[in-house]
Image (cartoon, rainbow, N blue to C red; front, side, top):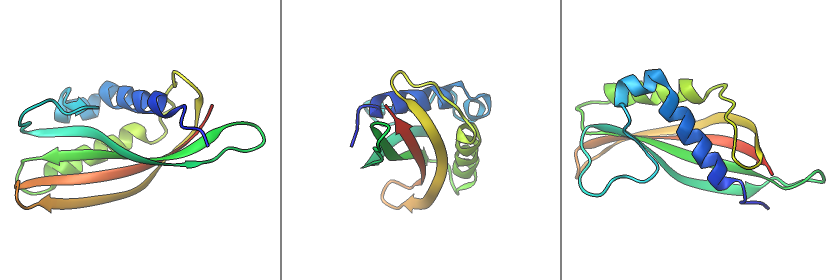
Length: 135
């Protein structure tokens, strides 16, 4: 297994999202790899956890990354969160980001989970994308 491309993949996905005009129109630059300290209000995007499995073969090291990208909002209802989630999907669908290390073989939408976080009265959508990388 190779986890060597993980940081490069995360950086490339972050750059794709940050550069997307439609997503920027919805959240500005509120796209975080690390959420700022304190209470963050409004709507923002956060690159989150990932699960990685080996995809090495005879040609070299590789891995499959299931990456979670979250939309979090304190807006009432899910309309804003779903618009942001759609913009993320649009930005990543067919994207061919250049990685600082290794290369991206493919990137696919895997699943989404939308829920209301009761105690905080926020809406959250976790989008999971599957990336296949080689080093």
